[in-house]
Structures are given as C-alpha cells and as structure tokens.
Amino acid sequence: MSGTTMRWKAIAWKTGAVARITMRQQFAYKTDFVLRSTFLLLILFVFAQLWSAAYEGDPARVISGFTMKQIVWYLVFTEALTMAGPPLCAKIEDEVKNGDIAVRLTRPFSYLGYHYASYLSEALFRFVVHLAVGSVIAWPFVGAPSFGAGWLGLLSLSVGALTLDFLLKAIVALCAFWVEEVRGMEFVLQKLQFTVGGMLLPIDLMPEWLQRVCAWLPFQAVLYFPARTAVHYDGAKLVIQLGIQTGWIALLGLLVAVLYRRGVKKLHVNGG
Image (tube, rainbow, N blue to C red; front, side):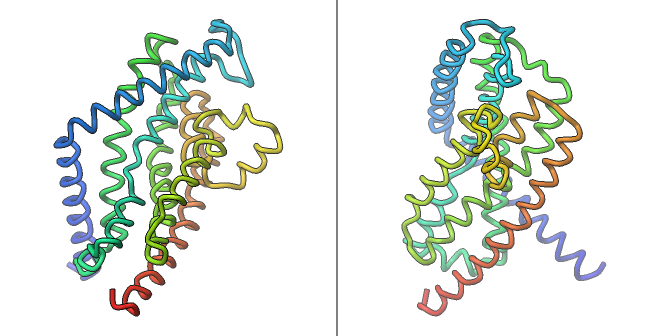
C-alpha cells in the first residue's frame, strides 16, 4: 500500500473519530438542545404570523413568485441552516485566550481539519433536528412540504452551504491570532447573512440594485441558494449554484489557509 493511501486513510480515520466525539457531545447537552428548539419555534411562529398578514391569509396569492406556503418553508430552511452552525468564532477565540491553541497545534491532526470535521458533523446533526422542529410550525400552518425534486436541491447544496459558513466564520475566528476579541466581527458577519444572505427575506423580494450586489457576495450561497432551490427547483440553476458554491469554497479556503499560516507564524514569533 502506498504512503499516500496510508496517509489518506489516517486522515479519514481521524476525521471520523472527531465526528463521533462531536455527535456524542450533542446528545449529552439535552438542555441546550431543548432551548435551541424552543427558540426556533418562537421565531418561526412570529414570522409565519407576519407573512400571513402580508398575504392577507390567502394561500393562493403570489408575491414575487412565492406563495405563502413557499415563503414559510423557505424560512424553515434558512433558519435551520443558520442555527445549524456551531459557535466556531467563540471556540477559537477561547483557545487563543486561555492558551489551549498551543496544545491544539501540536496534535497529529490539522488544526483547521479538526475544527472542520467537528463543525460539519455537529452542523449536519443540528440541521436535520431543526428541520424537524421547524416542521412543527410550518406543516400545520401552511401544509406539507410538497416540493418534489426541491429536496434533492436542498440536500445537494446544504453541505456546500455549511462548508462556506465554516470558512466565513474561520476567516473571522482566525483574526483572534492578532486581536484576540472577534465577537464584534462575528456579529457583523451574522447580520450580513441575515440580510444580504437572504435569511429573513428571499433575495428575489429585494430591490433590483441590491439583488445585483448580493450576486457578487458569498452569503447568498450559504442560505438563499439551498432554501430557494428547495421551494423553486430548477435543474439548470442548481448546476450554476453548485458551481458558484465551489468557486467560493476554493477562494475562501485559500484565504483561510493564508490567514492560518500567518497566524501560526505570529504565535511562534511571540513565543505562543
């Protein structure tokens, strides 16, 4: 067996081990799970009432190509994706502040690889759970999610969406190597995802000039692409969206790698 094959098998085994540990931790914190689920139910209930008023309770009415049913389920998908992401910025910030970063860097596993494996396994678990919880509000309110191939589009784009979410948060989190406190930058990132990312409102309903701006930003590929494809499936657009996701993953992945190398060099120079 070649050395490259052995190396890849070792990486796969380590990644699986991190994923299993992360999943066990999720089942251990039941109170946190209940609180997140309750918060999601409250948010979706409020939004469902607001959109019901906007549509005047008419399920057949169409606004910018969306029926009330599509809008409510769109919100379920964007909220599920938003709440799926673990607090990566807080984790890395704490590691830098309390010195755990020195231990993490000496482990026989890529620092970024470890955090990505942990992040993705936890995010996918949370995403599935939040979809189920969101259905408790959406299903009785607007009916079953009969989107057919839209489910395929949602699943196809969700892993890429969560990977992009990880990379965006990693860019902010790695700034802790220089400034330690990154909560303010994380707050700004969250608000960008809420607005130009299409979490609160589909980008189709935004002014045309803002839609053009959003088209040049990576945030739409995290929330808007998966949710809109789920409720408005289009095979041709799905291929384009997958290509856009891949491009942003490559670009942001390169930026994360550069920030990490420079950040680690800075820690070593300063005796960290």
